Length: 320
Image (cartoon, rainbow, N blue to C red; front, side, top):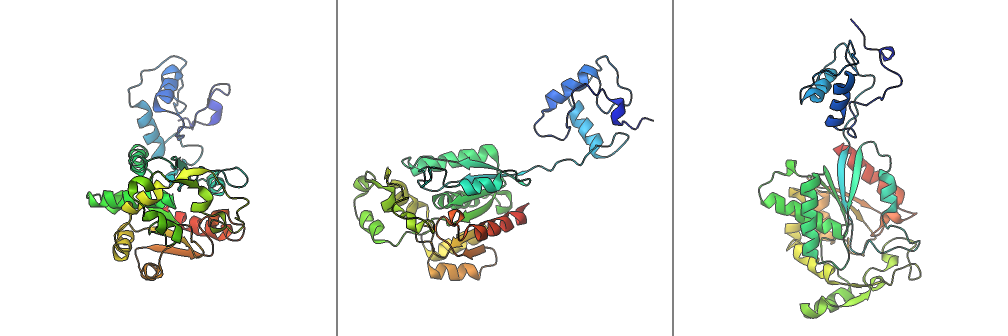
């Protein structure tokens, strides 16, 4: 009986990883049909009949062991992450790069997770943004949903809608909320604009720095490295309709979805929670709450980014 060692194979021919997710069954079937399987004990130069499920059965046999053992351990499937960005996050920061560059770097080369990004323009209708998120989740079936700021609002609303529709939480993606916008801001500017009629309020355009000051985002933020790009404010006010109606309802919602949360103690930029809500979440067993020193974008802070990523990594490790 042949051991199917490498010296039985043509060194000049193509080699394929039968466990790779980058190679389709059709492509691998074509290789077998064209000259025998890499695992055939008696390779033949002439084409051999191959049923439609040839490659599927071939992988199954290898996985169960036999005369042709795999030369390496099969690679585990990476868990899929869909990251939902926050409001106005497409606006360049002081060095004109992505606000989430450090989070992107964290996932580069990650052997456990593959991340995709859900992006939207700051002037889009929030209802259209949410509809787009539902479509992306249905198409990609992520294992994890991460939402920052306004992205946390959308992730929370998605989880609530699916659970209310009867979907078990175990069948839904694991939600991780980063400085999520879950309660109305308490600042004076927000309250003044809210008093205006909606038809007027939705047409107001102001510099981003007046909505979210850089000094409230990360420790080195200031008016000199802030953005003064003009944008509509309607998403901020429309998001309130996606919030829980009371603090009690918010806590119960987060418990139902078994949320993982990172909250910055210095966050006054939209991701802060009131002390009564935090007190209940600290005592809640279903919710995994991590409070760290930092502001709304603690992942961009030289003081707090290391702690942020330690916590995020620990949360992701509990998933996979």
